[in-house]
Length: 226
Image 1 (tube, one colour):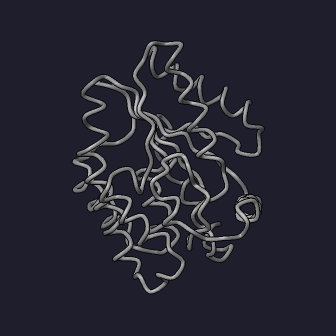
Image 2 (tube, rainbow, N blue to C red):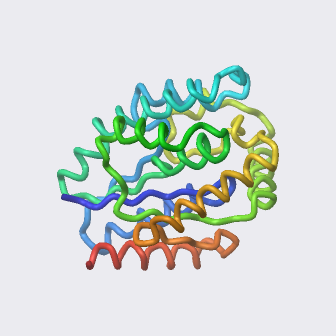
């Protein structure tokens, strides 16, 4: 059985950059590595991603939102994650169940026990072997996200990007939430990490990309060698 690593954090924390850096582990170790993300790693998931991240869909209720995320996750596990793990690959996933708990639980206020039950049903209880949590002050994270929006010419076009797995440039409704929401999400991630210290490694996202990549790579190598 392979190893499963997820990357978590608030908006603007650098998950996509770190995901790309970790992919460089494979050539040196002759290891198959599968880099993926949620939502949107399957054909069905890309349609769900468009619905979830479109700022025009502000009328989606928190319950509908979490059901869509878990539908994407169930399909993602069936098509991508479980087959890769069965091939003894290293799977690196940008967001997984802890994002749902942090955003829809701590952020939106849905009952945590029900979210955990739903996640267990959608995943069959599959959790990552390692969670790399990029921790960042929400003010800085939202500032980074705004800079990213400006660099992309301020044009929101998720439909044009949805087929690019390495692109995370869309200015989504999650980035447009108030600061208090993102603060609750960040606090939620830290509480989840505190409750499961053997699974989580907290990385200071204000570090430069190379420093972060080294810390993350060291954590993954410890997992591979254990």
